[in-house]
Length: 223
Length: 353
Image 1: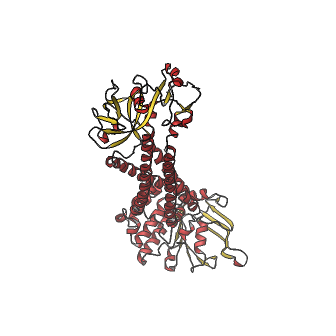
Image 2: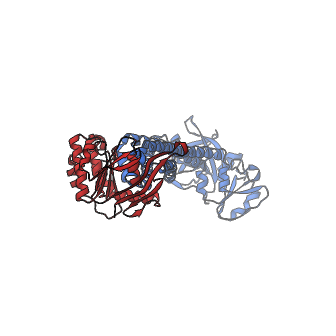
Image 3: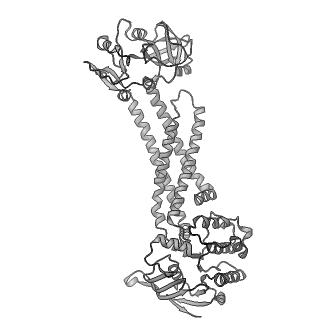
């Protein structure tokens, strides 16, 4: 069973002459242990695709199945809980809470978590992402790279099955970007997570299992 | 609570400003309340000490003790009841021997043996017609045990032999005399047996032509100016509390708008809207409680430095009720932001808006 599956999903904005089809009818699935890379020009519909997949917006038509469960009829609260439990978001803009230190970002996850699911080892995450020396820093006191790595650590800490990363290496230098991609690959393959990474940097796609191109709202598998 | 406290500690300046605003409003509310209660008490403490249910006054007096006068024929028969006591009232000007300072005072003529006799804090009850008991607030005018005072410019001096506490009427402290002295002062002769009112401590109904039986509440409300004073202060206090609602509402709304993108991130991370709203209200409660607590501390300090002549009374129960009212208003003000929080779109976080 796929971790997440899109069945004939499309997304339209506006109506009549102002109708825009941001995402044309799409079928897509992500399995455990799979690392998928998506690239495409700005405005091609990548973020729309990712946000529909992440249950942040509803499709105009079609179904999203998470662990086989149809999310179309779920209410907002159930979707929010599912997002907290199953998804890890690594956003283009840092998704850290500005008034919490790196350590406290993890503490918040502990406090909000209601499931008994085992979390990832905090120290391992901090070590892997080279964040031990900045655990007591606020996001404003971190460099761009440290912020992004802390955001990745925070997204992974809740041990989500699905990791959605939107330009996770945008603010990193090439060697650090390569490290992050290697880490995501490791997470996908060793921990059997499903990882989707959107990127502009096609060099990073080499590490992924499958590559898709998004263009004008159409998702096409390249590899 | 975790998010609320962490955010307040991280943005100290912003939230100190909110605390300071709440402090100023709370302090004003408490200060006005203390003045209102102090003034109201000075109007009525003597009446409150009677612990009575009704008062019988002349019908023409329009429920006012100060103008009522009841002839002996109308009241004598009721005095067999130990729960019915006569009182005489007149407003006078007193003067301490060897002093030119003139002091507005009330004279209350009472029978030392009935329940209207004042409770003494110092000294003893008078034994002669020239001995009196006075309210201890007259100490501010140097009148104390053993002082000699003259009343309404007469040549006679009255010796203070006892002090009592919280005995003022119409904001003026009271000099207690016996009935004979009262009648001499008011009517020029003790042969005129008139009194101002009958004070009734039980449920006895007195129906007598020319007399009206009124409740203590009615009597107090007909103290000249009392209702107007209470109303003015009440409206000022209510206005301040409503201002709390608006100020906290506006503050929290602005802060909420500033945090929309943050809330978007939190929603995207799967943090429930209810958690965000919970955090917002914890913040409001913490900020309001801190502001009000600071105001209470300053009230206690203020009290130490206020002149004793200011009608100021610290009513801690009233402060507690007002603190709760301010907190309720702050929470209501904060609820103006709920709609904004509910509309937060996590997409804004993803799209970096």
